Figure 1 (spheres, rainbow, N blue to C red):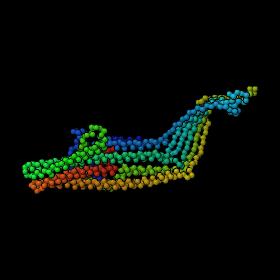
Figure 2 (tube, rainbow, N blue to C red; figure 1 turned 180 degrees about the vertical axis):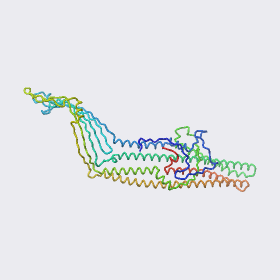
Figure 3 (tube, rainbow, N blue to C red; figure 1 turned 90 degrees about the horizontal axis):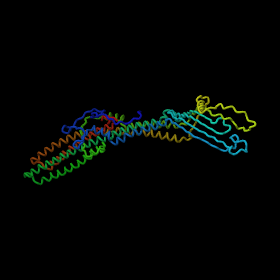
Figure 4 (cartoon, rainbow, N blue to C red; figure 1 turned 30 degrees about the vertical axis):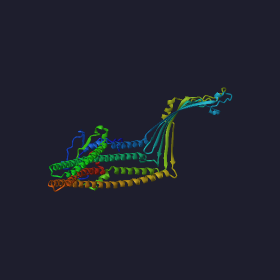
Amino acid sequence: MLKSMKVLWLFAAVVGWAGFAPCAQAQEALPADNQTASGAAGIADNTVELPLESVLLLALKNNLDITFAKMQPAAAETDIMREQGEFDTLFTSEFSKYRERKQVANFLAGAVSDPTAPAAEANIWQERYNFDGGLQKKFALGTEADLTLRHKESSSDLPFAGLVPEYYSELVLGLTQPLLRDFGIEVGRTFIKIANLNYQASEQQFRQDVMDVLYQVESFYWDLYYRIADLDNKRKSLERAKDFQRTFRARIEAGTLAPIEIHQADAEVSLRTQEVILAEARVHQAEDNLKKALNLYRDDRYWDVAVQPADMPERSAIQPVASDCIEIALEKRPDIRQARLSQDISNTQVRYSKNQLLPRLDLLGSIGTNGLSGGNNPVTIFDDPNNPPPPPPPSPWDGSRKDSFYDMRDRDYYTYQVGVRLQFPLENRLARSQHTRARIEAAQAETTLKSVENTIVNEVRDAIRVIVTSRELIDSGIATLRYNQEKLKAEEKKLDVGMSTAFAVLEFQSDLANAESTLALAYAEHRKALTNLQRVMGTLLEEKGLVL
């Protein structure tokens, strides 16, 4: 698992994408008269001509849904750092000053022995400075360590104080080691592991989001191709109707045709003009869909620019093998990987909650060293001047502040403690309920995995079915187009010799225009079906030569 991984918007050049990895690849191009040369992208004559490769790269760079989706793995990565923070080293420090002056009545507490003495002498004062500093750290094994340095300086006018001021220093290392609950590296790193799995799941979700967006963008691209082709066909149909209208007018002027016949031609021209207007509106709507997906609106130069697809759809002769495609999809689909990661998360939670069922039995231990020093203060609690006691020997701990640290360093004076601590809730309902819930969620994750597998099988089979159907529609559309072309030519010849009517010719013209548009739609839908199979197999990025 790579840490601090950022999603890089570096993309490779698009390789030739004519088919699918799991299937044999072969394609038939459109007839030569339906092909156009691809021009360079750029604004020319208020038109931008875009090849599909450029469209997909622009989508990766500019699409707002992709921009939003790429933030999810970065957000999930912060959860890893948050869980690792559980094992951060904590530095603590505390400084305090304490001073008091109080009345005392107890001789041992410092009260004077002469009851006639003034009240000002029947009191004491004390002053202390405390400094505590330490490091605390938790380890993956469950061990908790606490290293603490304490230093205290105190002064007072107590007559029996042997050192004034008094310096006391202590360094203590304390350890707590769980032996049952929370014991073990696997248990200690549970939440880091879950955060890592969630991060991997977010990466797969991002990959799925990118493929969905790219499929949508390519669908917009081929929708625009169809709308433009449909507009061209309707314009050609309008020109045929106008040509027919002009021919009728010439024949009426020549006296070979009754004037009433022109009304049929006029009505057809008006009807086809309406169809052209509607087709133009659909082209603009398709252009706007693609512009929005590519986020071109951020540059107002593209607001009123016409977008022209530079690529032509092709009929693929591949025959995808369902079993091979399903096998690849079950391995590479982001949602199946997410489902497996969710199952790993659930199983990890089950193991952790099982450990929490155990009683808490901790091994406790501490070891320390200390030092003492200060200024020598002779004890003067006997106040009989006629019979003074012999002077007390000087304190062996007479010294400066640093001497207390030297004594601590020598380790001649120490403390240690060893023990165990047992905690166990008698009913243990919290741990039992959490473990039961974890097992239920694990069973749900397993069911979800099976459901995703079934969905993948169904979607792949359906995608292959659509490819086969769209290819058959192309074949049928080509035959229908040729049939309508020949039918119109024959009907026009019959009209020239008076064996047909204007109504029949105009109807056959409409049939030809519809056949041309239907074939363009079949090609567009076929291309969308090919991309959809790549999407449902989870190989769309690889097939397009794109890398996240």
